[in-house]
Image (cartoon, rainbow, N blue to C red; front, side, top):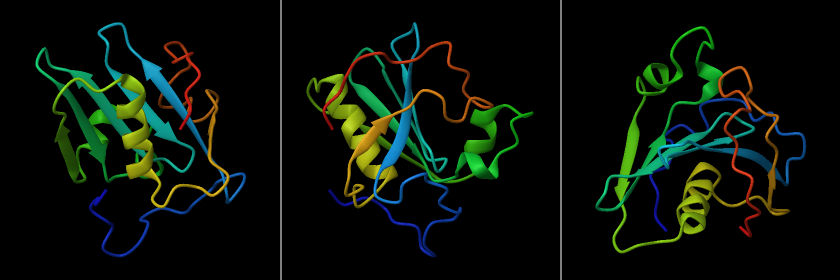
Length: 134
């Protein structure tokens, strides 16, 4: 897949606990929308608009945002890439695509679901509790 790349490299410091693995968390909201957050602050969100899935890939990182402010307003101050999905992909496919965009190339040791990261922005009240193979 060809995704837009940051022109000057990653705009925020990588603070991963393991440089070869990336932690992430997923929120599944009651309206069937999802937020995906990686441990280095990357964010993607997707929802179904009654016709197709739509993914928003945020170029701005959570590390650049103030948790006292509304996070979506702050993330929207940066560039947002939007993808309208054709057909009827599985939720796991949309999640895998978002993770691939958030960390390209993929971490050599894979992804680790960790619902404890970024709680100051995304409390762990609406987490995604399914096991995914990514």
